[in-house]
Length: 610
Image 1: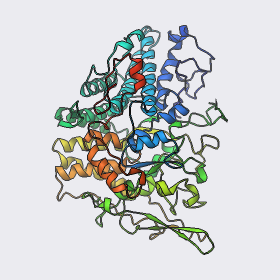
Image 2: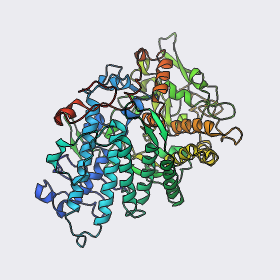
Image 3: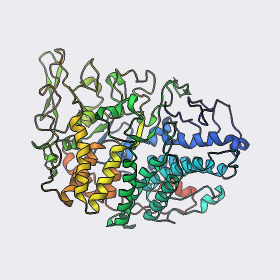
């Protein structure tokens, strides 16, 4: 049974919902809590739960939509993996500006993200302040709780660093009246990442190997997260322009050590079937290391401006991101043609690492008006070999959608395919016929967790570190392990029904699926690096990590400007769009925060000075 987070208000005085576990996490509703209770051991369980609930966003309804914890705006829309979607470029123009890099210090989204993450930091600090005052004899798990809060705070700070670069470090010892005096350039990016990694390592030294409650930070969560932070830290950046100036071998060795400890624990592994990643029944299974725990039918209710919702603690970060059709969604967050093309392989079942996939569009839909005035949509350019993960990750017209048997994807599922093409994001959604789909607003939601760290990520981080350490031969079987999972997963079968004559059917499947292992012949550091980066993109596509990966590798500008050059012939709104190196790697420090700091903050390079 999953750990139900309390979704407390920012002031930590909201009405509380009970959870289903019978430990400190199970707190019956107590009404309104005053400051005296919240500053005492009596209020400690509420503070601990508030810190955990912030993983879903401290404002878990529309606030989560504007500062999504799945990072679809910052990690995918700003990268080469996704289009905004919705009803056209004018539909939520602020998100359109994120996609086209029309962002400055006045843009609302960076401020939303900044506020959400610092509210989350505040929750951990509030819990740590109370923990510092309680007697360990009365709270036997005090040391464990402290470690959990430090790890959660490290997570929130990691997100702040990779979004904003220049941030303020505030721990539980700093009085609120001093916040205004703290500058956001006191520490460099590398120093901040080092501090964050140490927080995770300190937590790992204390935390148990597991908890009964799913979702809590255990020893291996902390170790895995420390590995991720060291991986980022290893790529040292010039503070003035964000260029990679060196790759630190000691940091890479830490990645190898920490990932090795997680792997050798024997507690985690890859699912046998890629599709299991999007099934509620398996969400806390062996591939899940650290996940945001969502739930339905848990007694949680909320009053919205126009409706009453009793769906539960669902993923409001994905509020807009479901198709129409059986989900009745808003159809935001669409896969880019560039990402679709990247799934193509050669006849040998290997990716087209020479970049030729960018000149070979896959799955181009042709519209034909019939004599009776109806429209038919035909998939073309689908005979070439393709990685089977395309149909686990991306929804295509005339192709089976998960296990849905009513119809394949049809034109009625789209809002604006003229602007955004015919491809959906298929990940993170349960099948409409699964029995797990919410039947009330927000449409298309479910209890499906969002995976912050899954086992495949740990394998890819380890392979990346080994390659940069000159140990590419050790990385190849790791990458091949992930490819073999995709190869051996049950493929997406064709939709055979005479009512849908245009449904894609290639030898009983929806594509000419060809995927194989990388051979030893020709495998060297240069090839391995290209292979690792491609595998990371494909395996983790649309999980919110793509832009952060490009920045870490130091290839964001070249990748994005090539993307805009190719895609502007397909998406007219990309004409003239450019990624500015030395600026667009990070979001701007929000003007609102500069004003609140009374001028203490400095802006990131490339943006107009305050």
